[in-house]
Image (cartoon, rainbow, N blue to C red; front, side, top):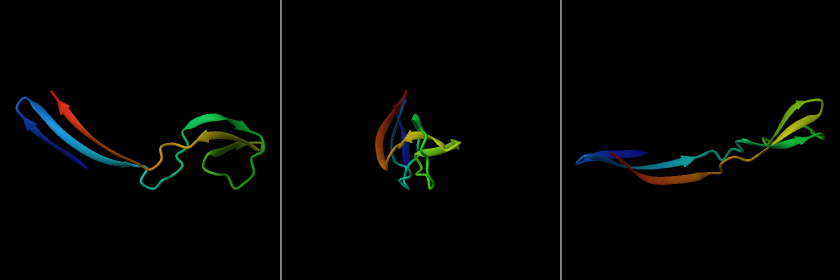
Amino acid sequence: MDWSRPVGKVRLGAFAQLRNVFDRANAVTYTGSVSQCAAPHPPTLVPIGGGVCDRFDRGVPLLPLVGIRVAF
């Protein structure tokens, strides 16, 4: 949600967001490879071939954000 309005020479705003609303793993940070990569793979392991998987950390968890904005 986003709201804003002009006030004098500035524009004031407020917002609310819900990041990762479905709470997915969203693997984003590479942390190395593993050689024993058995199926099924969790979302943090990505098979690259030859029984090797790249390992990633989980991304952003379910995260509510709120804030204000002032534009000049």
